[in-house]
Every structure is written in C-alpha cells, then in structure tokens.
Length: 169
Ligand SMILES: Cc1cc2nc3c(=O)[nH]c(=O)nc-3n(C[C@H](O)[C@H](O)[C@H](O)COP(=O)(O)O)c2cc1C
Image 1 (tube, rainbow, N blue to C red):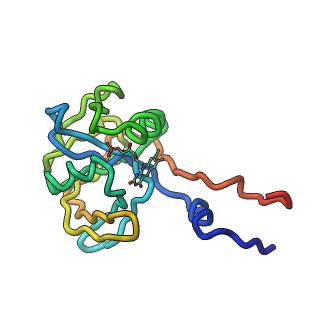
Image 2 (image 1 turned 135 degrees about the vertical axis):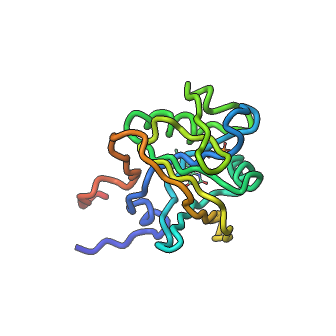
C-alpha cells in the first residue's frame, strides 16, 4: 500500500510524549508558569540532555530564560485534563495556571522551578543551549535531578487519524 502524504500532516502521525514544562518561582503565583509540550525528546546520553521545542510566543519561555532552568513533568491519565485544558490552552501571561488547575506546586529539589506533585516522572533541567529551528526554539537542558512521584503510566500524545487508512481517506 502506498499513499502520498502532505509533510506537515505526516508529522502528526509520529507518537509524541505528553509533558508539562514548568518554570519560575514555585512560591510566587505571578512569577511562575508552565505549558504542555509534545515536542520533547531526549537528545544525549552523556551528559543526559533533553530538548523541548517551544514557540517564541509562549510565556513559559520567558520564565525558562529568566531562571535558566525548567522541569519536565511527565503527564499521566490523572493530569490529562489539566494538560490539555489548562497548561496547554491558557497563557500564564493572564492567569496562574497552577491555581486554575487546583495544583499546589512543590519546590524542585536541585533547581528553582515548580514541580507538579502528581507527575509520574520529574526531570529537573538546567538550560545548556537554545537552537532556533524554523518557527520554534529548541531549548536543550541537562537533566540534573530526576525522580518518580507516582506509578501511573505516562500518556502518549497522538493526533493522527486512525491507523488503518481506508480508500476514502
Ligand atoms: C497536547 C499539546 C501539546 C503542545 N505542545 C507544544 C509544544 O511542543 N511546543 C509549544 O511551543 N507549544 C505546545 N503546545 C501549546 C502550549 O502548551 C500552549 O500554547 C500554552 O497555552 C502556552 O502557555 P504559556 O504562554 O503560558 O507558555 C501544546 C499544547 C497541547 C494541548
């Protein structure tokens, strides 16, 4: 079977992780934020690096730049709704997303950043590099601390159409 795809649409078929990237002062509602991200990937074993691709308009990028660090909170089913409807759609320019979501953030252990207490895996990262890539900025962070907060399974983000392609697709 062969079916030509539009490259932009084709990228939708790659399953992505679902994370909430948080940054800022965990104790200051006016100075903290976070955004849902699916464009995130590990990029190096040694040192352990992760990158998150962030549109320049996201306010979370301002917090990341100010504090030079961020947390990757891996989303589980119990965080799915706030990942889509709060951290993935509101902007921390206008609201404190943690209060809207009913989440009291914890302090990260090694860096200054808010942690979502019900995330399954928490990766604390220090920014090592920013790389412009098309209309996004890849923020590369070294994972300087990591721990597990729940035994719920991480979610995968996938917005492609059903895998079995029929003649009408
Ligand atoms: C499932 C999902 C995945 C997303 N992935 C990304 C991403 O990888 N990069 C990005 O810049 N925005 C992504 N977004 C959009 C941001 O989360 C959204 O614009 C957010 O409201 C930005 O908030 P901020 O302005 O407070 O940073 C995603 C949204 C959703 C719902």
